[in-house]
Length: 186
Image (cartoon, rainbow, N blue to C red; front, side, top):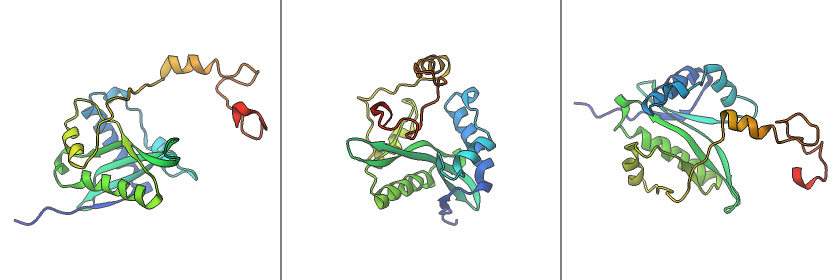
């Protein structure tokens, strides 16, 4: 019997977008919320490969086929005074779990943090997800004292309607050039 394939971890390429979108939808189904996933190839491609990307991705491949991904973006810690990486999604297909690719995806992001001087690699996990045991083995600690909040849908629209009492269209934030010296927009 031959040893399991080691696989490859690499940054996503434009040709990977369909596979990543498929895996994101697989992840949404696993997380019991497939109806909430609206990601399309066009949206992901625009976010990943814009001049200033909104998000980054690394792929895990076995025998040349995508079997997992890490989708991440930069955040910023005011306490540390430096950026960090926020891992939006980590996914390894059921057939490839146990191969070490999930650990290697996380190790790749940890290496980016160390190389760039970032101090944190953060992510959220659903409480019922059995991946918590895996995360504990790599030294990750749950942040139980923090309570996540989300504003979306009608609540987001309602709050946005209160953003511009000065006559600007609601939801439009002035650029720094439009509000020079204005401490509320510095």
